[in-house]
Length: 251
Image 1 (cartoon, rainbow, N blue to C red):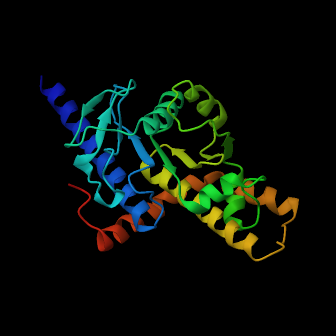
Image 2: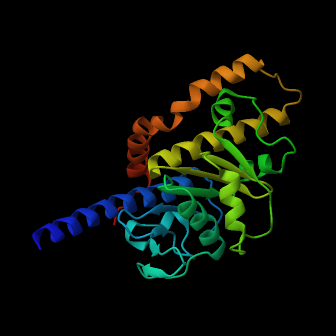
């Protein structure tokens, strides 16, 4: 009996840690100006044997999200637990359930409609090797063609097929998606991908661009294999930034 209580307590603590990290990620997206009213979504798998994940309540702005307001859903989209608002975005469920079900290593999934990301998603050539930041992303990147608002659950098969084993995906004519083992890692991928898109939009607006050599592109790709490990440095710093700018998420 005591062992079961200890296990339940440990699982509850682990879930609360994921909740606070995910709420922080929502607030950071808002802080960086990447949000889209109440649309788009970030999710994280709940620790434990059940196939549950956390996602935002549909109707709250990202700067309002708290750890306790997140909605826990199962693999069929049924609400298991909520902090008041029980609605979830149907398109959000389609996209996030696809990755959580299809990738055992996807502890978190993040999807944005931020303008520069959408702009690059609509560019014929997608993300170009115009900056060091972009070249650090290229080897982690895949693409998924637009099929309409993601309300068709059949699209999940194609989403996970196109993502493959990558950590970043450009959803054509739609936006960006990243997946990682933790919220911290997934947000780090998201930051690099968003920054690469922002730089590309500015660079193309300036006129003709300079292309690095194929060798430089390959060298940077080789160097990018540990990109997710940057989260060990970036996430504590981002949490400190958030604590100074928009505290109150960890409730």
